[in-house]
Image 1 (cartoon, helix red, strand yellow):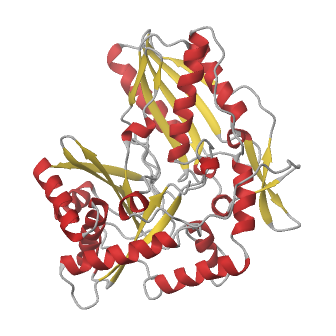
Image 2 (image 1 turned 135 degrees about the vertical axis):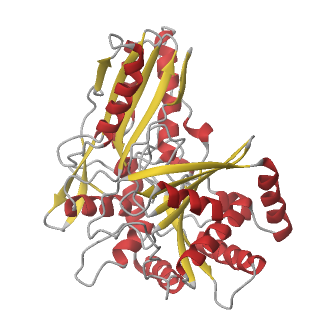
Image 3 (image 1 turned 90 degrees about the horizontal axis):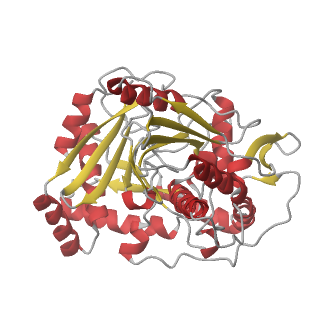
Amino acid sequence: MTNSTPTAGSAGGFDEELELLAQLLGEDDAPHAGTITARPRGAAMPTSFAQELLWLLDRANPGLTAYNMTIARRLTGPLDVAALRTALDALVARHEALRTRFAADEARHEPVQLIDPPTPAPLEVVDLATFPADEREREAERIVRSRARVPFDMAHEHLFRATLVRLSGDEHVLVIETHHIVMDGWSLGVLFREARDVYEARVGGRAAELPPLSIQYADFAAWQRERLAGDRLDGLLAFWRQQLDGALDPLDLPTDFPRPAVPSFAGARHSVVLPVELRDAVHALAQRSGATPYLVLLAAYMTVLHRYTGRPHVLVGSGVAGRAEPELTGVVGYVNNTVIQRGDFDGDPTFAELLGRVRERAASALDHQEVPLERLALELRDADGKVRSAAPFDVVLTMQDAEATTLTLGDVRGSAFGVDAGATKFDLTLFAADRLQGLALTLAYRTDLFTEAYAARFLGHL
């Protein structure tokens, strides 16, 4: 699952999800079990494994906001607010996930999805145009941060809220609040593209022509439950138990502050851009080694983590889109998965030897990526049956694609509104993006464990 909590203005910030292993290792022939089909709608629909785990975590931690997704975009240009409302209403009507609640099926001791009929999307408008010019930005940033800290009531409200902050006649900030249980990074790209199409159609005085959806997220959840059962699921879980054997102890990174009994999930970020020459050298090393730039970066990340901890085995979470079935292309929901990558340092390998090991394990992990991380977490729950964490790792690597979550609305151009919502689910999450000016690296870190100086030093070592 994603792994980092997205922050306002992040390019995806949700572990997306680029399917780099599938694309670049050539391992894109994941097994299929037929077409996902629409299911009859009852009073309640089953949840996916990912949704079940997040629901359990929410019940165990009332008021938890670590899995909130707060996305902010600055909108520059002559915004038609009525057309924006029309676009948001259309999205809610089109995608069941945006109007879904979650309740307990007490008879079966598991959560279910309750899908409500379409209603107008909530859009609160906050006008800051009367504020002094030098205060508008600060107040808008305060609004974004405060929205990010508002928990959702999964049983009684839809997990999709929107706020439009007006800075001036031609400048606004759109804030979208949602929850990982109904959304992933791919879904955000779907929403932005469809919002653009509906908005532009409304402004142009015509009806929007969006392609019909053959399924909704609830159909995927039911299909997943049926597919991952019996001998097939047992075989996948057996692989992962073997893959993780001997490496499940916490990484136990050295910290600046004592590790609290209950994590706050408060976070911050530190960024650097590696020069073009170093970026190109990484690509060249990957080519010589029969690997990919992603795998080189993963091996380097693991090496620094190994040197910090002395651990012979290092686990890193890394996201894949999980949308091999064509029916899922336009579906909004929590589909993406996080594959656990393992680095083995037994025998003090050279970096070239480590890279070879990482490549081999990554290929095997990809072949078995179908089992959701959340189902694996349920399998690895504590002896008392409680789920303490969503993942058996403390650190994450995420490759980002800024273009996937670019928002344009006709003549209105969207750009990141760079506010850190101040939350992260893991000890460290490394975001990497290939840019014209070099390799951009951002380290998200828990502020109850680390200082900014720690993050800067870690990136320097990397």
